[in-house]
Image (cartoon, rainbow over the protein chains, first blue to last red):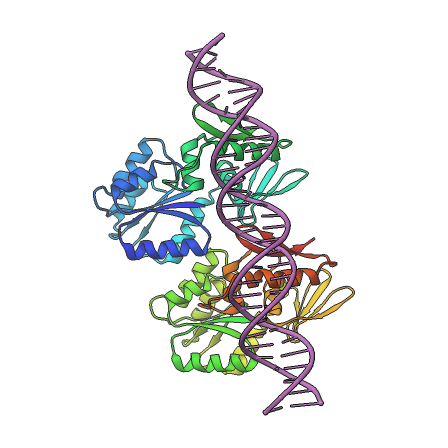
Length: 222
Length: 222
DNA sequence: TTCAACAATGAGTATTTCTTTCATGGTAAC
DNA sequence: GTTACCATGAAAGAAATACTCATTGTTGAA
């Protein structure tokens, strides 16, 4: 699971980062609206948490812009005001949930988990199921009809990304961003290798990983 | 056995700590709701004792939050009010028991022991049974099909932790926290040593300890 | 109190597994 | 057919884990 937090209060982001670490969740922090938009345009997140009051560009603007671009990552809005107005505004714009500041971390993560687990993704608890494969995201074990594979960390992250959104095409850059993190200098050939490894492991299932030449990869049903 | 007490009255926590020491129970104390939540999110406890009235964040909130996150550690709620309302509220939220302040230490520990021994963990009295091994947590004796091992304290704590929740993955950090206690500077290599020792002892049973590379360990059926 | 036995720990090495690089061959698109 | 992109295998390099051993600490019996 990878989350983006767009929030300028350092106290809050520090706490969130710590809570993510405990729960073994990958997260990125953007400190202002501009940076936030840039990050959020990258469809590699399971959930985006957007503060409304932000330097440079408001959360509402960010939300509008990413939805305009067809990014449908679940978004949870944070607002200090808590007025009906804001709620309506946020939800109308395509936010999936909102939370009023000050919020309890408990509630935030509960809602994040709920968003990350929406039924369209075939996620049951800690395992993702698609066709005849299932993947346990805690143990990094891939279960197919007749075999079970322990995946390495990188393999697991790539598979999770593809499996959570079947038929969505991910670019190589998006995969690099999500799996290796930003500003890492990694040879894209590595992706090809891991995809190759994964393909070997799902070879006799109903699931396949397609290459979209010049773009990236997508996972789907055979 | 390791217990978390979330309670702000120093008089009470001091007494509890002392009583734990006498009974050879490991315990941690959190003095306010915020700290309590952070501790409680760590699934290393056998029982969590939660005061309802707490600074910063109430016990109810903590309970809600940890349940939302899938932490199913048994929780005992403490309340000064003792109203039906509070009882119901606590139990509805997923508390497993409650106790009205002022309580007798004897009753508290009786209930703690009861919670720590709930049937869903294969715990009968003071021994834990899983597949063809059983482990006496008082005597630290591991019983397998054809042998009996007296375990050292550390070995025993690790085995107890894994055995109480088969198939749950524990990170090295969680094991350090539970077995060595917080803020101890202990070489993680020690965990490997004890896991190695334990593996040798359960080698011809139906139980195995798996390494989840990059994450930690989990115990399960072969 | 002393000694023996055992437990805990740190350091270091060995081993396994993962990650990345490199080289080469294949394939789709133009 | 040429070119750019992708697939694949082998192997070097890096990292995580397993195991060994020596030292120190603890405990309990004599």
